[in-house]
Image 1 (cartoon, chains in turn green, red, blue, brown):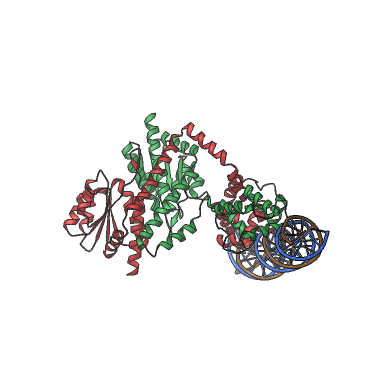
Image 2: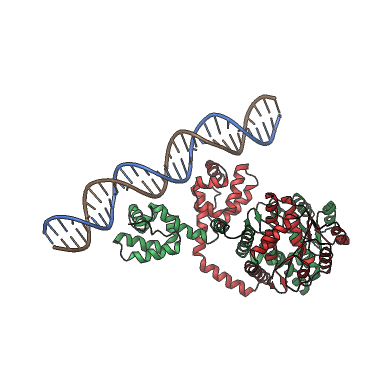
Length: 276
Length: 276
DNA sequence: CTGCATTTAGAATAAAAATTCCACATTGAC
DNA sequence: GTCAATGTGGAATTTTTATTCTAAATGCAG
């Protein structure tokens, strides 16, 4: 029984099990059937619990694993777990792969690959995370107001500045808050509960953004926030917030997902206003 | 420590963690954040592996679990595992949900899909179009200079403003040219052939960007350009230029590819400068 | 049926994991 | 600054879990 078999990914393992099941002794066939039909159980269970539920002895599971070329049951279980893990992301491996490329390609094109890869990943996550009802609600809230104040500094500033530009083109009254000359606080002091605030901030949260949002919340101005964690100080003051996790590469976070969401909000709000 | 808390389903648990995180001691907050951000890791890992990756002691994980009303870590882990188990079972359900979405035709989520699709497409094209040698050359040119002037208005301004921010963080001398107070022309008049210009412009080309670039070209200042066509007025004055075609949706062009290229240039230039 | 090889059950053992405990550190009230 | 209360790190302990081993059972060729 050589160990040169033992696939590391679930699809290959499943194929192997099905193929080998036919020529295995009785109890091992039983395990094979059980494993293919209850992969979740195999992924999460213990040797004892699976043995019980598949109606075999614990040792049979170990023998089964070894018959397939694995070192023991735990080894085989890893593959079953990877199936559940990979569904979402598996990016360390891909990053490693990217590093591998480094040798042939130039340093800069490696970076380009990395950054666009991170962006693609971010976009994929975005689709999964954003709830359409919440999105709808945010659009309505923003469209119902008068002036939309756009608050975002540092890394988030490109986003708000884009929104300001697009809103301008689309005829939506807005005010871009920037820190030039420390005027931020004054700019926003004109805001009333009829207005709306769109605040964007990611770790490490810019203190100006946070304090601005807090002040606005006290005055009863509705805040829509885009941030990266439920623990963000923005989440607690916002009337509604979106969580966006941007993939990062070499410590630089993508902005692709945030930008897509920002464009969506911008266009949707403009269209909503037109209809009224 | 009453046990009347301790939710059995993941959604409730997540909500509880988020709520309680604020009033928990330091290390427990740390675990809370980690758990919310890495639910897969918590589902699959062992106390030891999770502790390592969350940078706490194993015992902290147990204390955390108990603080939430669970008997121990294993008890809490069960709930994290249920999330992955359910996801597989809910597969059909989710598909149904998706169909539902289509029917109610949430306008905003259609937009979101459209914009993120466009972004993904742009990124795919980017990888094909950019030549690594040219990229390398652009990096070298920019890194060799003194001050890098970043020129981009309107739709391109978010890009240059991001670069300016990132260059600042990375210690690369740069000057962001914006149109505030019409100072653009003056700002750039200080530039010498030792400096570099990075100009970004897409149709319809902002006239200020073009004229600025032309003036700089006359003074012999090397220009690296990012634009969308060989016929762009930027292409003819630049010493080296990249063509980027951004996919668009409803007339709004993505910026994902441009941004990825911008990040690449930024980081690559900073690294190059460090080496010298 | 007899003898040999393979398979199996179940207990024994080894390994790994979770949990507890306690000394030390930190925080906040006075 | 001192004290008490609370929180923390790390080792010790307990529990759970995987693996190995052996005797018995089963199947199969002759």
